[in-house]
Image (tube, rainbow, N blue to C red; front, top):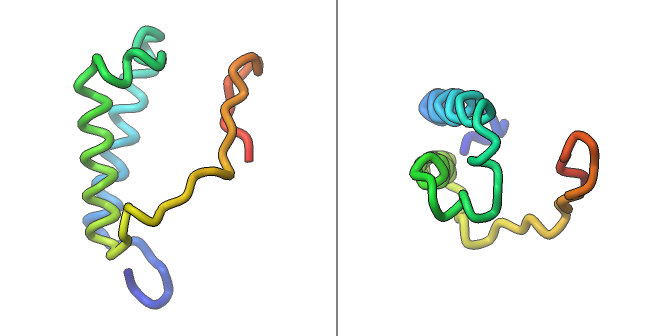
Length: 82
């Protein structure tokens, strides 16, 4: 990653692909369950794209800590809250 922490253009392109996948998946509620994380290939594609972004940016994905994110399952908008 550059000193000013700007995303590489390749990373931006991969993020656009992830965004397109999320938009398409949003049309199908069945793809937004815990079980679907294992079942649908879209989720594997998203995981692989995300790993590629981390590699391009020089970030070791083994040291990423997402413990600060909580899922509020009963929230009306089903939002991720910090």
